[in-house]
Length: 315
Image 1 (cartoon, rainbow, N blue to C red):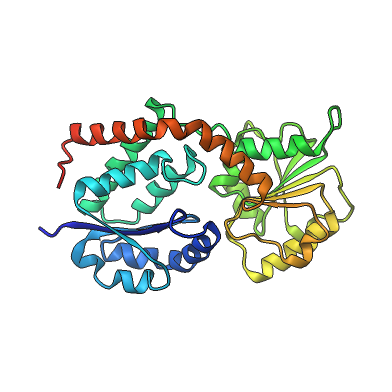
Image 2: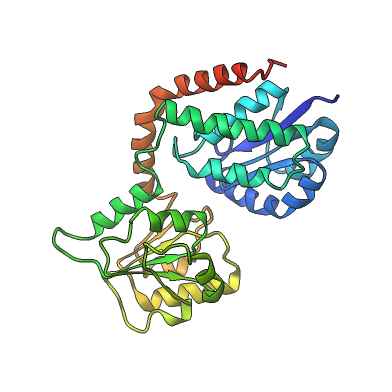
């Protein structure tokens, strides 16, 4: 039986923006890699591949030709890293919960009979459980950061108008369900396909949102509205349509949570635009990570002990 092998690069080995650009290039080959028995973990801050050594041959040349990568070998070491990723230990925002769902989704592409599928699925379960036991939960998660940015833009007693959410994927839905729009008169989800999105939102019987295409907004200025961009599915055509709509709308602030900022430099001069790479956003991340840094060794030790109990031998 061949050994399990992993190759990876993440935001701690290069800049977050460079990592995001590289991840976008690699994501389209996820299905092809899965058919060859290779797990691809490609998020905005990492590109990692895992599988039996024969399945990973030539992968370093095709995926990591432009970036340096590290090598990790053996079942125990790979399970430890994947569990730590699932726990939020290697996230830019320590303790953020979304990464475990992203990892679980990546695993679903694999054949369930593969060793890497079984090891990775166990690692996700262990990582999630260890995070809860050690209370390794981000206090300044994306929703809290967005809340604080919104609060900073409105004086006490000043009522916001609308919250516009661009995208209703995993992050967009989580933000809406967290209640970030509760201060606003209404919440509007901006989408290119309202019909399909309406079907996906049918279970949301407890939350009221309206759906609009980008071209349907901006008929009047809304200086007391906020726009949150929570999607990575933006091609050049959609970018231009969305940008023109926001320039017409002139909201108080646009908060862009995309790993690759959506708006062009020309729009930046006319809008109050906050990205994940701006000092305002990074200050929240630093505050969160300072609070959780002391818990990191305990979290990793908890994961290691749990893997040993699960009989993941140190091989």
